[in-house]
Length: 413
Image (cartoon, rainbow, N blue to C red; front, top):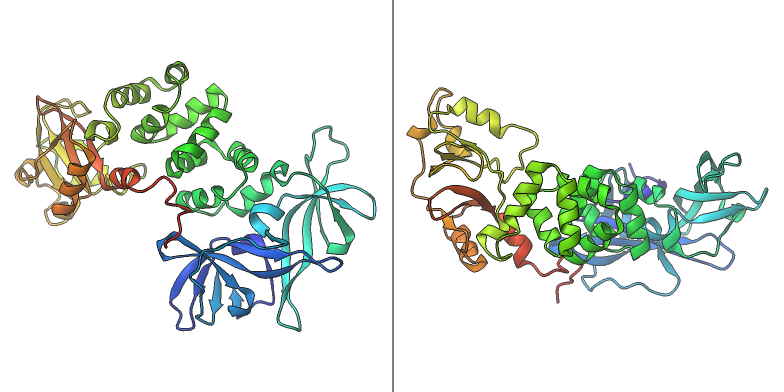
């Protein structure tokens, strides 16, 4: 059933569908146009379609808004999106703005607002959901009571939008996956991006940093104190953390490594020794490694662990002891699909794939890309001169380096 009243924060990430029910994109933000005396009205949506292209979907082409989805008439202008006139982004700019309640002059901040379908077919801001400043607290904008108000009952404070409270924005993007959160963060002013990063918990921030381009990574990590930066880097994949730290000063890198978990720090120190666009510089030193007499059942238990990334769960590498990188001599690999074909008691040594040759630490990215594509692989083992397994280069590691730095915001020509 189509809604006639929706709250904008709930629209972030909603699917956009054509008349046949096929998904054509997702909602990134809602555009609002200010008017002199009347409440702002929605002019349309910023949506992301295939190829991460950002386009404008006029409100006139939206036929229905339902929980979790927008229905369109199928007509989508593929030209790149640009802001116009008095339009503002509801989620990125309006949520968190400070307002003054006209009745009692009390300060509050906008946590969400509803847009409602009018008789003329337009969608107009109908109600604000605001949080009042706690009168008894000496802390600016400590959590106070919430209240619903009409637009004419408040006055917006004339302040820099970048200084707005990040809590409301955090609520709006809380359900986004790390990759989608990174896309949303790239659209924020620098100060608001840093404020949002400050509000994220360490694990969520680590996931975000792994998805952001180098410039934004450095802005955020340089804004954190050493203790928190070390905690966040601990939670990142060693290869991602090493890529980030390679761009920090030698002094700060050493300070952070000293504050990190000893094992994590050692992995990163090892990775920092290699050139960035080689197998050694891009590899992940934490693949699943087993002995030849490990059973299929035991290997499957390792694959099923929640903390194992999907790309690393696609294969199990078999070596002589020790079984942590750098390991004993590399013996071969068993792909996940092969594990499914054999009984639980089967030993990995009897089903090894020994034809997949490992690559050297100094193998350049161009060769890695060709090997992954030629043999339809998701990961390549990396060994040293003595055939010790040092880590694996995954397809997502290669993509991160092959794509341009601004691929999240780049528009197709």
